[in-house]
Length: 334
Ligand SMILES: Nc1nc2c(ncn2[C@@H]2O[C@H](COP(=O)(O)OP(=O)(O)OP(=O)(O)O)[C@@H](O)[C@H]2O)c(=O)[nH]1
Ligand SMILES: [Mg+2]
Image (cartoon, rainbow, N blue to C red; front, side):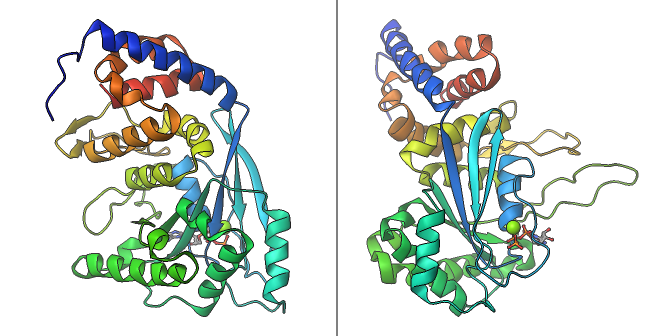
């Protein structure tokens, strides 16, 4: 792309300052906002582990026993002062002892789930088919809400390392296609074909002898880091209303120190006995920019190189979650 002659100019910096004022005002309001994730998937598939890995803390507990009834559990929590809810739906995708008709489940969902900004359909990557319970869950979700809620949907495949590398891409492709085909029955192709999928592996590497804490993250079988992809995809798909609070709640989780070279991230050797930060590749940075420009600070990208100049000093001067969010925008456009 040809660079505009205005780039780096005082004009751009002036324009970026205007955007910064808008952003700070929105942040002020968003601090009292709340976003929510709706988790769908069979028992033990890794729903809680996924949300914990993304948010960098234990926000949802593992359910030790198989659910007998469909229970909607809302975890009210926060991250760096930003409130959010995790709406868990144990039993929804499972074979239940409870006998109930679809209408009963739908009413329960409508009454107990007030709204959500991001919806995750979680399943094992290694499996071959969509179970009848999962199909039913897809139907119930589509009928309880509107098929358009799938526009906020992300398909997440856990236990990626179970799949050998030579089968990995085909597996990811077929699993995604089969789930999309099921969703398509309610949404049509327009919506279903755009639902992205992300493969992840939340199990940690073993700790070195004598160390306590959390092990490092594994990569996917194709050698790619998955946490940055999970973050980017969830951000891209989250509702416009949920985008800023989510961005703020995770701003401090993004690793800004690492150098991006081409499309790969140069990782410095740091001992990871704590929650790993989220690293973004050059491509993922661009996707995050695009979402900010579309949903958080409309039109921001027009200020080009002025963004880093205007946002950078403010991000550095202001502390806490506000500084982190402003600083992250500066870093993204640096
Ligand atoms: N190897 C591996 N194990 C995983 C992965 N994700 C989750 N697990 C393990 O699978 C078990 C269930 O994970 P949870 O995150 O509790 O699953 P869940 O879907 O929230 O389960 P319920 O809350 O019971 O419905 C735990 O022992 C996790 O450590 C993964 O990606 N790889
Ligand atoms: Mg759980």
